[in-house]
Image 1 (cartoon, rainbow, N blue to C red):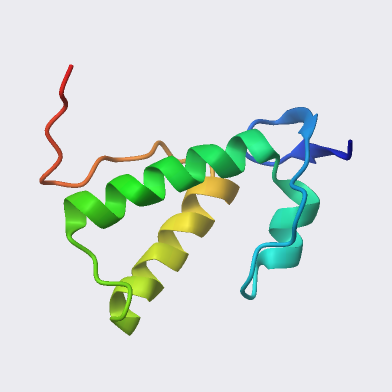
Image 2: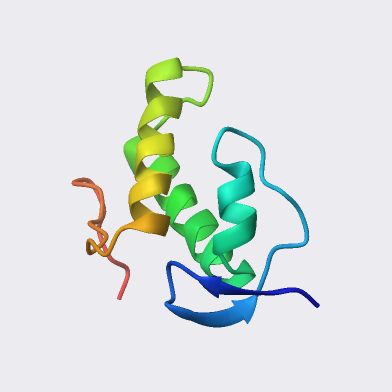
Length: 88
């Protein structure tokens, strides 16, 4: 199993088994762990559902791209969408 030093988790972890599509795909493959990628997919789902994003809309796809870069490669805390109501 391939390991990477994960930019999101700041530790060594198992890497992805595939190169994600898109312009950042290779960078993600080389520097993001499978665990961090799963965290992104969960957060992406929340963004799509709570923001009622339409992936056929290019502006919505661009928003997700920006959010993905921020989530994976910055140390900024993730904010929940305005409409999000916790079930806890």
